[in-house]
Length: 243
Image (cartoon, rainbow, N blue to C red; front, side):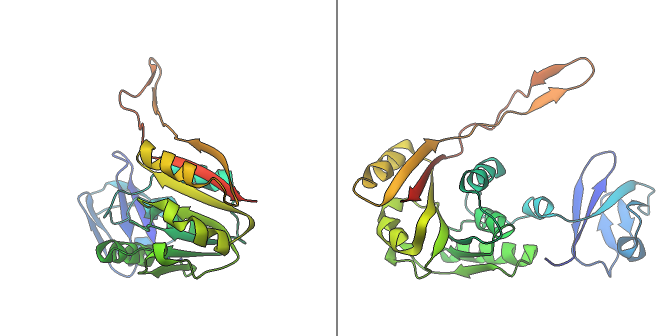
């Protein structure tokens, strides 16, 4: 991953991603000189005296900077996919319906290799830009239609964020290892029902179908309450295993 820095303004918490450490960085809180960006100090000041924390950019910092095209898969759902499939550094993965690259790059940050299929030319450009931002060399992007087949074999995991995932079941069966996982992400429950019913008579066992809701809390000395707005339905997920 290319070396990048994240600047966090102390009072507001606002973040700034610095890609080039050889030039002064301009913010609405003043200018940070390149000498400070390349130095070892984590606490620095801008030209206006504002205090910043300077840190190495981690993957979540870069994820926040992703260019958005289609609806991006959120971290709560990505985290569940990672936990439920046990993805690790040895996994070979195919992700279809690359979208903005949120899922495929989150998986690439952990596993051995991810091949992303994205047939839409505009979405393809967005994923390309986000791959370049992250700088991972184990993520391969293909402008290809996965409904026509999967060329990669001996896969540990296939993730599908597509309108008609049932069209991929046969080719997924041929490409996954025995015991490999197939994860489907859909916004509509009728789509999910059609997918689940299409698994009958196949080598895939449906482990569970679920959605994940997220609720943040506000806590200080006097108050402990949930936030008024919660992150509710984003998508339904079906977890399947070839066996």
